[in-house]
Amino acid sequence: MKIRELLGMHYAINHRIDSKLEQIAELRSLAAKVTASPFSESHSKGTYSDRVGRTTARIMDLENEINDDIDRLVDVKIRINELVTSLDDEIQRIIIERHYILNESWEKISEKVGYSRRHITRLHDKAIETLEILCGEKTELCS
Image (tube, rainbow, N blue to C red; front, side, top):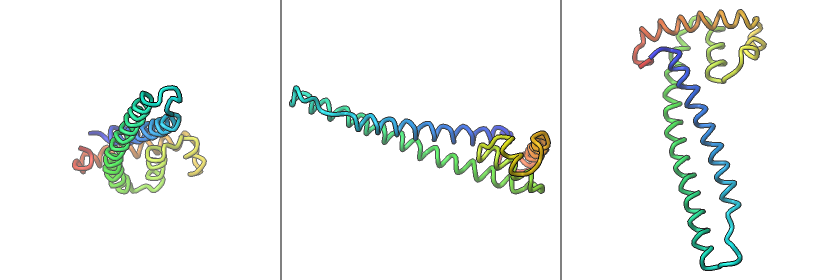
């Protein structure tokens, strides 16, 4: 696996977790709206119970999926951090961490670091090249 794939994996897992959290919030909102019908007491109790049960089960499934995703995300973060800390250039480390881990734009990074956007992208490219070499040397982190 190349460094860009590893960084992309972090991005994808992070967004998958966010999406599932949004789904859980929506399901909880829907579950709060589920009420028994006032017209048919005997029939509506079963329907109400089924809806709440299905919704609760789906929420629990999503929470389990999120836990699995979080475990994978933590593993990927550890691998990325081990590689990034191997960079000699502190600014390059900051650029990689802020762009890939914190999902910051080039403009925001350039404001924080005090370099032009163009220079930030050049430093990024150098950092990626260095990380690719490190991936070749530290295959256990990039596999």
